[in-house]
Image (cartoon, rainbow, N blue to C red; front, side):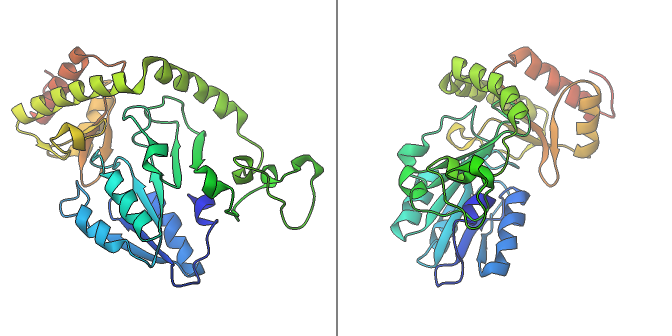
Amino acid sequence: MAIIASCHTFDGPRNRIVLTDLEFPSNMYLFEGFRRYGAEIVYVKSPDAIRTDLEALLDAIDERTLLVPVSYVLFKSAYLQKVEAIVEKAHRVGAQVILDVYQAAGTVPLEIERLGAEFAVGGSVKWLCGGPGAGYLYVRDDVAARVRPGFVGWAAHAQPFEFMTGAIEYANNPERFQSGTPNVPSLYSARAGYEIVAEIGVPAIREKSLRLTRRLMDLAREAGFRINTPEEDAERGGAVIIDVPDAKHAADELIRREVIVDYRPGAGIRMAPHFYNTAEEIDHAMAVLRGIVDRGVRP
């Protein structure tokens, strides 16, 4: 994200960065920092903390908008955004789109080139099963040929091992977006996860994910728990967020009992089954959660 932002100046009339108030906090922190260079940050409020207000977001994207960072799947609710409409509106008014696919890649099929987005970013630590320290950046070819990133390092130079001083002579795409020495151990550790996901195929993973998340939702509804995730398959990524009384304690207790989940303040317990999970594990996880909610009695 920082590399992308550094490709632009914010001292002209087109200086707006438009994003929703449901974006991952790191994205907000980064773009807020560009206010010092003249950027105007516009937040579009969600009506329910689960979904984006699509019409309000589209209305906010105008001729003053430079960048639209948008999460393909929202981290807190697993809402699958209507990216096509966002990209279409942005391009109609001359804005550029940054797709954050961190919560989508590996469990939701992506067609970034078909969508026509200028940029996409993400990381390997989630559905790609690659661990931390290996992020990725996509820049559309025609955009890469003309932008000049400011946040780069020696590996972005056309002749990096000459260690030339002064202003950079940019390498071609994709090297021109490099920073310093690559994190080779993390790249190698991430490789196996990518290979496994590619071998299985994201469409097959998506089909199983929808079945398991539907099972989670049915069991949560049966237990009387609040679900902070969209009901419709077409609006849901790979996770289900379940809200129960004292959800933070419940999440800690689930982990203590070797049911691995995550907790999101203001949302609840995030359960994220992947291709290696089974229906029996879903049933077990929900039985354990019901037992915890019932005064911590083991099921």
